[in-house]
Image (tube, rainbow, N blue to C red; front, side, top):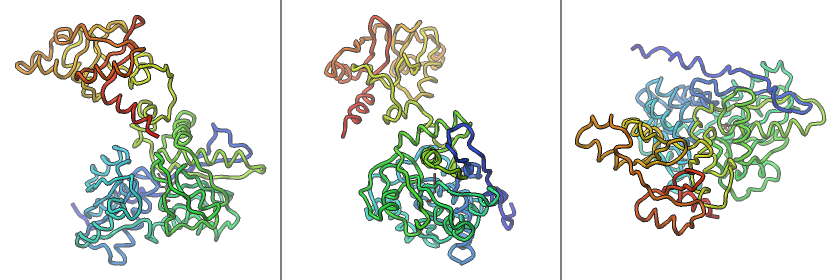
Length: 457
Ligand SMILES: Cc1ncc(COP(=O)(O)O)c(C=O)c1O
C-alpha cells in the first residue's frame, strides 16, 4: 500500500452542513445548528486532530515512527486516532472512566491504545487523566503530546476552518454563537475570527451544572466544581487557552435538561446528537427566547449520538441515573430495574428452546429469565439450569425451557419488606416480585446495590 499519499478520509474533515432549527420555539430569533457530527470521526474534534498532527509534522515534533499521546474525553482521541492511524503513527490515549463504552470501542477499533483512568480525581492527582498522559508522553520515546488544552493549533483550527465556514454559511449575517467549553479551543478560535469580521457578535456559553466555566465567565470567581454526566464540555479549571472576552452571557444547564433536549432534538428534527448537543440546544433556546429583537444564532451538534445509545438514548440507563422519572409505588416495585408493566422484562415461554433462553440472556446481559405465559409467571430459568441441562450433551439446547426451569419459584409480594428481600438474596436467589395481579419483575443483588447507591447523599 503506497503511504506517500494523503489518506482520503482527511479530505472529509470540515465543511459540515448548517441547518435551521424549525420545530422548536426560538422566539424572535432564527437558530441554526452546525452538524459537526458529520465529520468522519463523528465530532468537531476531527478538525483539531488533523490540525495538531499536521502542525507537529511541520515543526518536527512528530516524525515517522513517532507516537501521538493525548488525554482525552473521547472525541479528541477519535480525531487523533483517525488522522494519526491513517498517517501510520502509534496513538496512545488516556481516557477518564466515565466515558461511554461506544467511544472506547471506536478508539480501539481504529487501533489506538487506550489507558482508562479515574474520573473522580482532579488536576494534580497522579491518576488525573491529563497528568497520566503527560507522564506517558515523557516515558515513550519519540512521543508527541498533543495536549489540546495548551496546544495553539487547537484554537487555530477553529479560527481557520470552523469560523470561516460559519461566516460563509450564514451569508455574513450572524449575531450570536452558543458554544460549550472543553479545552476552549472552539470558543477561542471563533472569538478570534469574529473579533476581526463581526466585533458585535456575542458568544453564549452553554455549561453543565457543576462546571466552573459559567460562573467564572460572569464574575471571574472560580467556584467549587461538582459532577456532571454530559460528555465533552464543562471544566473543573479554566483552560489556559480560554478567551472569554466575547462571552455575552452564560447558562448553566443540568444533566436532566441536557439529556432531555438531546432526545427532543432527535424526535423533533431527526438529528441524533451527543449529550452536549442537548446542553447547547437548551442554552440556545433559552437565549433565543429571551431576546427582544430578532437575532441570527448558531450552535453546534458537536458529536454524534450514536456513541450515546447506551446512555442518553437508553431509558433504562436514564432511569437508573435518576434522569428520567418513572412511576413510584413506595414498595419493592421501585427496586425492579426492568418492570413488566413498562414492557422492560426479557422473558421466555415454557415452549421456547434452551438455545433461545441462552441467546436472550446473552443479548440482554442477564443471568436468569422469568418464564411467562400470558403475563403470569410459570417458572424461572437461570445459567445453572441451562448448564445442568446441556453440559453432557449440547443437543439438549433444543429441549424446551419447561424441561429445565424451576417451576415453583418462591415469590415476594410488592409489599414485602427490604428485610425479606435481603433474606431471599442472601440465599443466592433472585427475588421474584409477583402478586394476584401477576408478575411485576425481578430484583437481583445488583438492583439492591443500585437502589442503595441512589440513597447516597
Ligand atoms: C462533545 C463536545 N466536544 C467538544 C466541544 C468543544 O470543546 P473545546 O472547548 O475543547 O473546543 C464541545 C462543545 O460544545 C462538545 O460538545
